[in-house]
Length: 155
Image 1 (cartoon, rainbow, N blue to C red):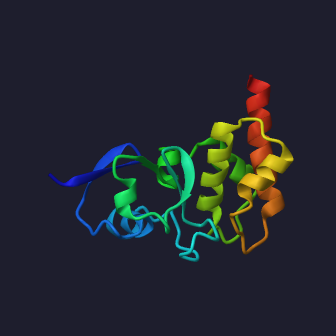
Image 2: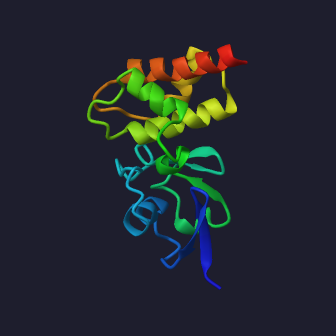
Image 3: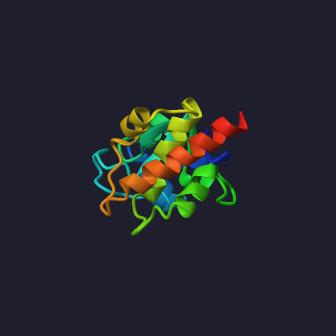
């Protein structure tokens, strides 16, 4: 029996070496290209996905370590691109080049899933490992804060 991975709610048969980084399986085999290759060492955050709901650097995780676990990529965050963070990114004009943004959004979504009302210091700590070459950190924080504030107002 072949191994399977559950990615964005769908089962995928795994027919690759289990040592292959999950990032390459997502991009090269399944063509989920929203997850980006940045540094290959887990330092920049461009490859961030959710593994069992937790932000994880997919360049560091072998496919074998993801078997039996729930993988969510930026494509699976919202089927139609209307996740509150995706909308806030647009509203606050966060992206410039856009390369790091999927990883930024996935890290922010992980933060807000566990802490819907983070302090500014908690936002800074959660986003610390995501690098943005364009330096849009202020807008990233504003977008995250706006989603948190909207959640507080709705409660």
